Each structure stands twice: as C-alpha cells, then as structure tokens.
Image (cartoon, rainbow, N blue to C red; front, side, top):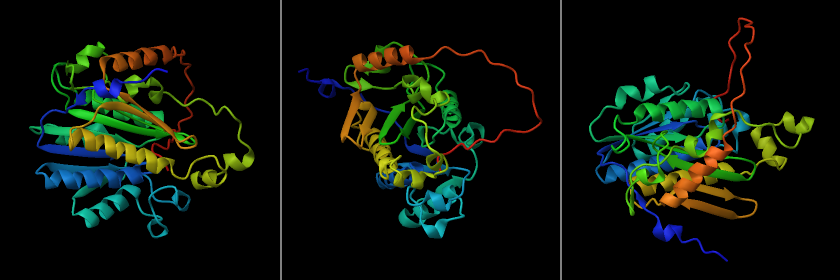
Length: 315
C-alpha cells in the first residue's frame, strides 16, 4: 500500500498582501445560493479583523417554484431576483453592504471599474453550470493578471461544479501555463496556481451528451423533480458550497490553504484533495494536456435573423 504524504510536504498558498478584498459571486442558483452565505460569513470575519470587504452577487434569473428546496430560497421569495434576494438577506443578517447585479456577468462592467485599488485583491466565485459562463470567468481572470509573471496575482478564481452525486471545487489565479516550479517561491510557499480552466479545460467546452438516455419523465423534470427521481442528490449543492467557503477561508483568513482541488462523492462517502506540491501540480497539468480534445472545424450557419438565447446560470 502506498501512503500519500503530499499534505505533509504541501506548500502554503499565500495571496499577496491586501487591505481590501472584493468578492464576486457569479451564479446564485443551486450552489451559489448556499455559497453566498458562506462567503458572507467570511466577509464578516475579515471585516472584524480590519480588512475592507466588498461582496457582489451576480445572476440574471428570478426565484422559481422549481428552485425549492434544492436552492437556498423559500416560497416567499418566488418571483424575486435571486441576486437581489440574497444580497438583501446578507445585508440584514450581517450588516454587510452586499451589492447585486441582476444580469449576466461582465468583466468590463462589474470588475474593471473597481479593480485598480492599492493592496486590493479580487475573488471570483464561480457557481455556474455551463461552459459559456465559465469562459466569461476565464477571460475575467486573464484580464486581472499582472503585467509581469513574477508578480503576485491580483485575482483568484474558485470554481464549484457537481454531477448527480459527485462534485469538485478548484482554485487558481492564472490562465498561463508555466513550469510547475514557477508557481512556488520556495518549497513551503505557493504564490500562484493554474486556473480551474487550466487544470480542467473541459470546463470551457460544451458538456457531452448524457451516457444514459433519459425517459420522457426525466427529460421534462425540473431539478427538484430530478432529486425525487433519484437523478440528483438533494445535498450536493450545499456540499460544494461548503468546500468553496472552506478554501476561501483558508486562503484569506487563516493562511492555511494547502490544496488546489477537492473531489468528493456523496453516494460512496469518499473525498480526496490535490495538495500544493510541484509534483502534484505538474501531474495535474500533464493530465489536463492529455485530456484536451482537438478542435473540430466550424461550419458556417445561415443566420435566421434571430438571436440565440442561453441560460447562463444554474437554476
């Protein structure tokens, strides 16, 4: 039996010195509605320790009846904007000035005007369920990167995703692929990490078709109905949100983060993390490169004059 000692050897992930942290929660659906409250508690503790904090929740959708009970909403909130509902709840509960935007996430509108402050760090919390929204987060992180690669990152992106019973949470700060050793300043300190989209490039691509065809009842079911049909765990979203909150707390509050990925499965009760060593980072980068599929040639389609519509955030 091989014993994994990477946790004992893992480097601490230390962000740059900052006096202000700006959090942007993108997606306020199944995972985001739980993660927002976890991030709010972190903001409260950081404020108590003298840090300036800003929290903005971004989601264009309204609360619907089929969001309950999978998402962190109640019947009295049906019809209200998700982002506004959570922001007002946080403001009243913790006295935080939580902002909201009931629209699709946009770097130029939501981050750029406030991203030039001295000793300021930007935290992107991705709680979306499709590749288009994650591409927006990928581009935002890219635009936040410092000019020189040896500078400490200005922004970090933590991304949560889930399947039927399983989930993953990834954290990173750069879309540039470098030698594994370049992410570490010493054997005990890690200053930056590859972005979630670098470790898992499939996050930026359309999902593959379901391996098992669904019957008519399953195809027509909403998320809560899928829970009742056994197609999705009732607790998977809240579990992903807990991991998001814990990673950010370790990164920004206790300076104890030693991992860059967490994977778990509720059905089997198993979980594992990838810890911050040059060997683990290099192995993850190699696996990511092997999983990249060659791009297919695109065919030009005739326009019918209509603008395609897309649901960008998890419901």
